[in-house]
Length: 476
Image (spheres, rainbow, N blue to C red):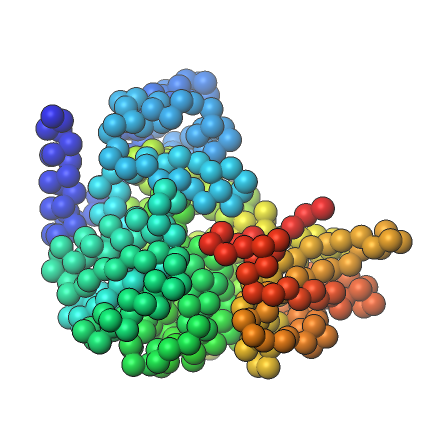
């Protein structure tokens, strides 16, 4: 019997139920504890000629090596990445979704769930008033070894243990089961929260039922979506206020949830969605990023060469871990000043810093030197007259024809029973690419700007297999 684990769990629950004052030195404290208890990290420091005793200040911390999967997780035996070199320090194993091609093992402990539960608390309790409203939380993320479903279920149950009138049901990404249990359970609650990946949640909502009667709220993760998508899905789900009732999480398999949308961050993002020139100036890109707020008392962010670096505790403690997400950070006052400078006053919200992310460059296609992003194409599919005929899933490819000329091909999944117009879709996508993507507008010759749109039926096994995390790009 490991009594030290009992002590850690007791302390974690005490902190969750009665939050203590944040420790301003937690980042350096985490580094010291990781250096002294995690064999792999100690070896990495020695290999880089770093004495942990020399790391005393924030400036010293900046000298520490950046970690990533290739130079850290894949270089050491799994137990050596854990405290005391013991995999049993954690009580659960999660597996990454493998979106980069190879699933990765991430040990977890109950303490990690409680850290992440605070982000769910900010969304469900502060945002959706689930502290006082009887709430049915429907976990629509895949269940099993993958990180989303079981981890989400556990975090929401911790809120119930804290006293929130929340009840969880976890049908996973089984649409038939979701639609079966909702009519039985929803009438007993004041609101229903669907938690899942955006394309899957949209597919559930498009399946049709009296959503307005269920008083739906949405918690989404895993993909960047447009504000047009938020408005479209909200209309179909009978959601009156998309700013307050639809929230995205910035979640990673590596370290749980790093940040979450608030009504304030959504209102800011909606402003910049309507002002692409100003958005490009602020975020440095033609794409509209996900914009969330994060707790600097448990997640420390940096930016290195345009990609995000974070420090966080966990089953595998990560110090200056470079995730592949492109993005940046803003202080709270800094972001409000930017809004004011642009003549906009956002909704009130917590005084927490902001992190924005575009997703990973892995999910782009280069066409005539221009990066074509799924986010740009999505807006074209969400135009009136088109959105009703497609599911929102698509695949972008840069392909060669018989003359070795390049074409931009977009394979689109039709909605069940619908007959989309490929020509109309192509025109809409071109229009949005020209509006949102300055590289596309300037790099791609006019005669090549109209994409080739290929339609596929719903659930097409080659492009849109059911139950598999969707990939929006293919490379030759």
